[in-house]
Amino acid sequence: MKLSILDPVQITVGQTSGDSMRASIVLAQAAERLGYHRYWLVEHHDVAYEANPAPEVLATALAGATSTIRIGVGGLLLNHYSPYKSAEAMRTLGALFPGRIDVGIGRATAGPKADTALKRLRDIPTPDDHDPQTEEFLGWLGNDLPADSPFHGIAIMPDEPAGPLPWVLAATQGSALRAARLGLPLACSAFHVPENAPGAWKAYHENFQPSRFAAGVDKPTAFLAVRLIIGETQEEAERLAMPMRTLFKLRRKDNLMLDKMPTPDEAIAMMGGLLPTEDATWPAYVVGSPERVKSALQRMAEITGTDEIMVQDVLHDAESRLRNYELLARTFDLCGS
Image 1: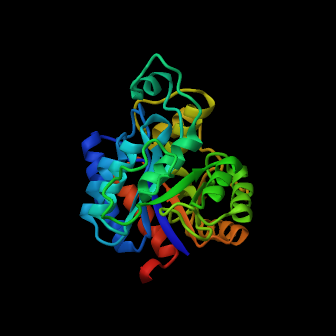
Image 2: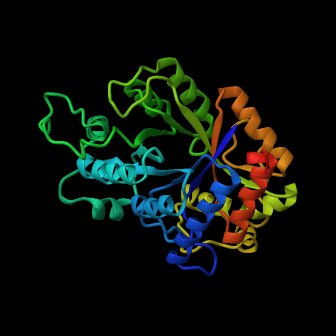
């Protein structure tokens, strides 16, 4: 099974944004040595403990510092941007690093103020036009806009092949069906709403149509994404997972955004103790010893038939992050590690 990494570029304890971005470059280089297949970056805005508002810029640095691992802008929030300008950025990355770049197409709110700040025309409500935005973006990636497009006849670097490879980010069945209809690869989140993952995965594979876009694919292509913390023991993993679990509990359930990453001890104090590890088939967090983590990922792979799982950590320091992926690589014997 292939393993990949989804990096939110958290600002680890005692570090600046610049420190954390440079640490991500080092982590991507380590991931390449360890045998990971992809290294993707999220796009988030106005998150005080993350340093990745412009993943297309950081992706250039990651790709330039590595040579074989696939690099992904794993969240291009197309609802905020011009498809043309977005495709220009992605086509530039693809031309610089041919055959190594992925782009995940998503949509999300960054919060009322950040959403407004991202807009060019701030007094006009943003329409719900994700489908035509996505199709236009795909047309630019392959320079195959339809004849009735108002932009037909102009192109972005037409001397370069179609691409980079576009993926649909999906946490729901609706997004999975969009990927199937357009003939695009599916990045299926098993952590936003974990119980949605099996249905989204099934809907995609049952409804897939070969793409009419040059940048698309002709057969179902998909991976699962999970949040994961691994430790030498169950107790160690549960302690290390507390900053991640605390951040997301406060953010999603209590509408409280912390202004910095807590340490494990600080997180435990905030929550009044350790939060118990989930035993669900589709947990929000995969947390545990090598044996427990391997069993959980293999179970997910058997249920879906996937041959690739992308994992995201939210750990409090760079050393712990590197150790997380070294231990996971050893657990799955990536490249004989």
